[in-house]
Image 1 (cartoon, helix red, strand yellow):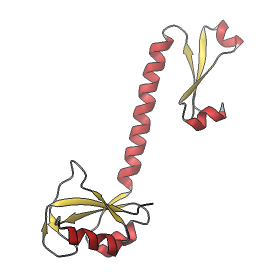
Image 2 (tube, rainbow, N blue to C red):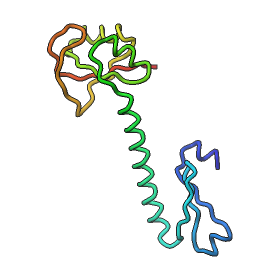
Image 3 (cartoon, rainbow, N blue to C red):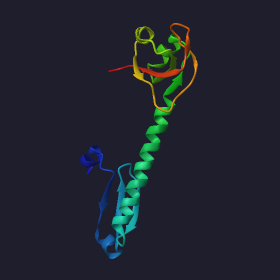
Image 4 (cartoon, rainbow, N blue to C red):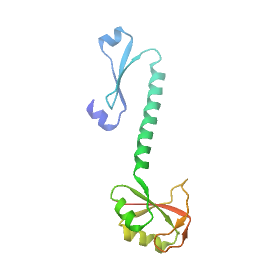
Length: 139
């Protein structure tokens, strides 16, 4: 079953003689958590468990992502931070400033994230900036 866990299968169901006697199955998550589930209503229970597992994975990924985004005011600060995450910076929107940001930090502009807004000054030209941009290394 290791092969299937590596492929990302979230659960495996173990059924043994004792489980059959108890009219249950053993549900094992790929992270090792085991739980005995009654066979009655098994499809609906599995569906609920899958939804819970997906929500857990999404929360974990979201928390990880947000912990690796830092607001940076200067190009030097952004350059240091993008070694381990994403720098969030204000940007005036001019192409020349975007290219200078990339050259100075060694990263790439990843775009303007939806739902993020702010104001400040462009770290390159010093003009008022209404756009937010993420900068990170690109592989």
